[in-house]
Image (cartoon, rainbow, N blue to C red; front, side, top):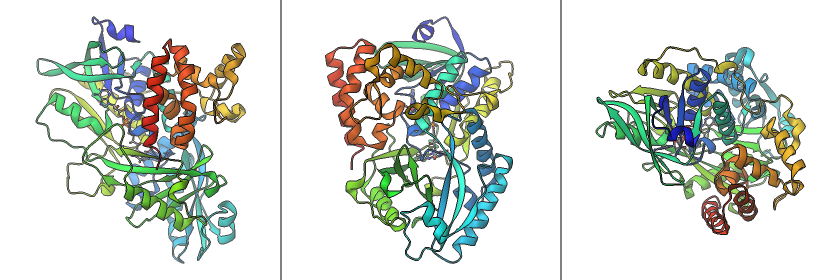
Length: 512
Ligand SMILES: Cc1cc2nc3c(=O)[nH]c(=O)nc-3n(C[C@H](O)[C@H](O)[C@H](O)COP(=O)(O)OP(=O)(O)OC[C@H]3O[C@@H](n4cnc5c(N)ncnc54)[C@H](O)[C@@H]3O)c2cc1C
């Protein structure tokens, strides 16, 4: 793929800047329609917001509360499409709203019936009002003081960064060129129109000039920086807001049912969700001024999460129980600078500048495909290309497998689990588990060979989710991962040392 972009004579149909859910979704949409596309990501795929979500593929019960029916309808439709096309990564999960006041049962019961109704044929299961006993049976650790019962409903759960990796692989299979660690440093203009980019390979330092018929800015919270590369006086439209999660041991919420709290003190929803044998609790909504690739949770956000979790569980989590914590930045778009971030619409914004730069921002993970479809439709017009219809609604995503449970520990890889097993067969040493026990060496080799992992963090944070699940466990694994990667990437001992040190620094920020 590097060789392809080095060929300066080539003109691309589209260049996409940004390798999160939005950019990779656009790359797949364009490649699957037969367009020539190059995607450039400055860090690793999904290393921005797209690996830091609540991991829900959902219509959004909260948006229903806000009366945004069209957003919920669209997201519920996309939820169904995604479960069909990526069943190895997206599955349904029961959620219970525990009720403590007399009015909550009927109130949330009716709201969630409406949610079922909007999902129609794409529903993941009918909602129901539960008695106190039924609620406790499903959530043995739920706070029982004054508990009246609960309302159960169903939504989708997934692994966000693994889906980005699989989407990127699908885009490559469809003919796309996608590269990580490539930073776009400048837009090229011809006759006042954006006609390409200058991109820097952050591994070699080499710069490339790429020409294209249209450039698509899918850089999430960094969108304004690219918009200002095009037009330095364009007013910013990004209103980033931070959301934090903490991860707890499974004993806080055993079983397979999540808790949904529809109204926290600051009027948000809060989830406690079983995820990869741990419990994910989140999130917050804190407006921030500065955007960074590594946002940090703030003390008051952690306190808020611990305090609210304690209200709904029998065992109160303490700071020492936090196995990992992480922050993500919502790429919210609003012209109204005074609006509270929790109130800004989660709908996406597609804009085209005077010079033809296309920016797609906002929205939700769940709706990435719909956002991509609209973006490519617009980009075709800007690029003056023939219109090819979208095929993504029925396109299976790399790893597609209906019976992923057959692969046990490797089930998130879908059909790639077979390839990983082949690696172990050829090189039995790669079958040995890494410290901690849940991951084998062959997965590291596979991540380098087939998933473009370039650093220890790429593996431990996004190809596998150890850093997000248990930061200390991830630190313990880092030396073994560095050794395996170094052999595969033909790097020396110095590279290993630097990688371990740099990973340790990153992992500290995931520890409370
Ligand atoms: C706390 C939180 C929880 C959420 N939970 C959910 C959920 O459960 N379900 C749901 O549907 N949605 C959820 N969302 C929303 C969802 O995560 C985001 O809408 C989505 O991930 C945004 O993806 P993106 O690709 O636009 O941005 P990003 O993932 O941030 O990708 C942008 C990329 O652009 C790259 N980039 C920037 N500048 C350059 C440059 N100059 N050159 C090259 N690359 C560049 C960055 O490195 C980055 O990787 C949540 C969001 C947050 C913050």
